[in-house]
Image: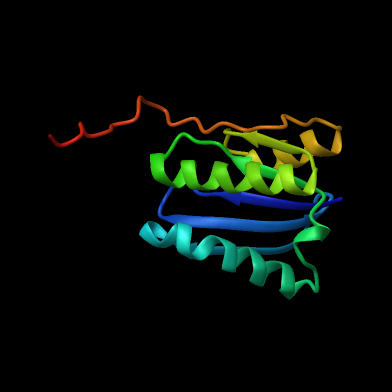
Length: 130
């Protein structure tokens, strides 16, 4: 099973590509405020480095937080859209061994269908200007 992993809860984002539990490629980059602009390109580059494309993804693991509201919102939106469009299973984890537990969940046949971010606190949203 080719598994895409994604972590976007902090300024340094992470994506990985695994064949079952064997790491094929892993990239970290300082995405910070450019996450939405860079995430698709980074995944594309990661897949191409393994001579693959988006359709080769057979499962997705997402680190759901806690962490950055915007980063988790962007990441969860992306993985939910990809999982839905490719009709592949998706799981979210939030422990320190998130990669291992998430990959194990997928390999055991789990599928959450939709993952939600866990911010760790209520979102701090500014009031609209009048």
